[in-house]
Amino acid sequence: MLQQQTDAAAKSMELAERATIRALLNSFLRETGMKDPRATLPGLRHYDSFPKNGESFILHLPMIDKTITGAITYYSAIGQHVYGAFFYEASPAGFFRELGVERLIALLLEELSLREKGAASEANKRIVKTRIENSLKKMSLYIEHYLNLNQPQALEVGQAECVRSEQSLYNGHPFHPYPKCTEGFDFSELAAYSPELGASFQLHYFAVRKALVYEEWLDGEAGAVPPSVILHARQQLGDAAGGYRLLPMHPWQADYMMQQPELHPMFAQRKIVSLGLCGPVVYPTSSVRTVWEPSGGYGYKLPLHVRITNLLRVNTHEQAERTMDAARVLHHIRHEWQPGPFRILSETGYSRVTMDGIAEEWASSLTVIYRPMDLPNPFTYVLASLLESLPEQAEPKLIQAIRRSGSGQLPDLREWLAGYLRISMLPLLHMLAEYGIAFEAHLQNSLVSLKGGMPDCFYVRDLEGVSIDRRKAAEADWIHTLVAAGSPVLYEESATWMRTKYYFFVNHLGSLIHTLAAYNREEEELYWRVVQTVLRQERSAADARLTTYIDDLLHGESLPAKANLTSCFLARGETPLFVDIPNPIRE
Figure 1 (cartoon, rainbow, N blue to C red):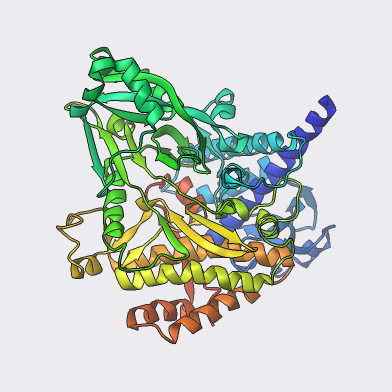
Figure 2 (cartoon, rainbow, N blue to C red):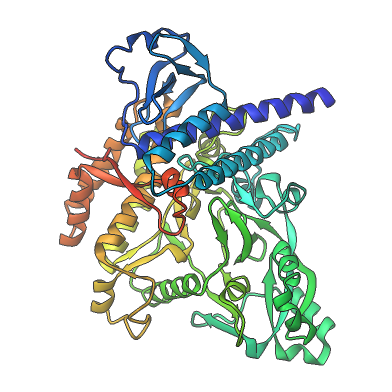
């Protein structure tokens, strides 16, 4: 047993290092405009001579005059290249020194620090390096936990299917330098709260004086607290229960808030009363701070004063306002379009503790957004997780899910993709063209239900990422009726279209197509042609506005991609940079 655990620890670190290097290299290549690193530099043909399995690549770092080389085992049109197991630092004389993960990270960060001179500092470099190391260690721990389970790894049928997909995102964002970094949780707390370790827990509830709670709800909604919690509160508060509102809290956040000296008077004066852990068990989803209770459908986007990737995950007033403005608009038009296989998991309200003298930091840390999730089909999965393979397995979880939800046979994957585009891409484009509403439909915000192995229903969630075209909102008389003129949900049309192109076409479709094509060992371009075909078919009956969007996709030279590595390096988490990448849809 001890030897098995030792082997699992070594293997998990190897897999985590490989995933980290891949994400760093692909981010660096994308953000520096190098589409195809396989091209050999003049005078460096001998770089092709080292032992490898695949095509050699060369990445020259001109600012530090160093060269990294290795093998690409799968070339990706969207930039999600797959590499061999070994990397080398090469000299012009033809000598190769094997590169470990620490040295490779150091070279890339040194190159970035010189490229961004004047805008970055040594402190920035140290912060990014520390967070990369944090992410690497966490990723290794999660993979090790999986390898030590010693049980068949087939996904279970039932509500656990979706929970399992939410809790098995081991590598995370393929173009982020530290996708599994969490600063705030210590390692002893990870087992209790990390979805990757299969965590589940009860929520901690605060009872807050009604006068101190500001709430907004959609029409017909009246709260989202399980009956068992209401009963517990009445038992604890007695006759005073009617004067309080109940606020669910992440257990870690509740402990953190009760330790803050600025809030001690509120607890001492019983303006806030801790009710402790109660209610049903919930499961943290892939975003860590959002939790779901499958049997009752309760869902909460909780504040969590933990830095996950590069942002503290609290619910600011602007974020709550943007979420509810989007929810109100979508609720208003719900009878004008038939959701069918395209559905929106809408937030229904939020609660926020407000009082004179309380800082925004604490108000944001005491704001809860309610997002129930009703997923009747047991074969429902979060896309981000499906596109990964389980550790030490070659087959993506998507392929496993297709088999399990159907007859066990795989359909033609290009036909599968076409079916998926009809329930996801086309409704998203119609929603933008008809209503000016754009969703932040990246992989973690998107779920798919499968039936008979084929896509059956597409869900998009997290309305905090919605953007609404200001001109369309004015035409529909939503401004001053559903949203304020200065609402943070309102954007210029160019911004809503740019966000759609990145979040769905680059982040979402880019990774989905890569997964399908790489599994079949085919070029991604074959699957992007499916996208072209579906768009051309839709264009034949499209109105002018939709035609404009489709033509941009079919003929535009580039698409926007978020520059996560550079943005993290420049501490621009709230205002990330974007770069242009070649448009793989272009005819």
